[in-house]
Image (tube, rainbow, N blue to C red):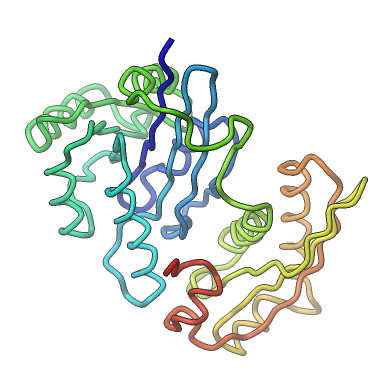
Length: 294
């Protein structure tokens, strides 16, 4: 039997459920999920292996109009997905008719690879609205396959996965068959901490923060981790720490519990907070945090 493999790249506006779909396809929570936009900042690969195929799902940041260099780097990750895609999944929700970046919208319309237009969150709309959505997208993207799903409720996910296997190109595996992702363990530590920050802080704090893990010691019965939460201003440092350290203690507890599930091992987590002024507009810092690959 022939072997199939390919990159299945997931794109769309912020908060349409791209990461929820990617996690559902892979069967493990690799991408963090929060109600806030710009939760996903990096391109994350999730690899599904079988003796007859290898599906490489690429979760990407939501498409936005860049406001600073961090945003520009995030959009560079999206642009790459058009270059190496074997299949594109364009995720939308009800009345989500326009991408927030016109150049990328034009790229979608001129794709040379299979395009699956996925209408997510259909558990939140009725049949009449769904039929209206399907009619709209058939007109706008006539060459796409339209798939109504609910990634959160796991509706139509296995059927979508089967269809993706059908249209995967023939080819060898790109990664070892026991590999789940392209990201190292420290990346997931950083993302778990950032997810808890996104859920626990308001206004500009979650968007001004980066997390860097400078120690990861995997011992027999425990993983010892030291991570630094980086903020842009001194005033933000105080907010992150909280009164008598209460806020950062909560972040540490929630992060540790999530990490113990992820790594299936006891975790010792130490957190610190440092100020790195205007890091989101600094090329050197963006390269340090993995946003600039060049």
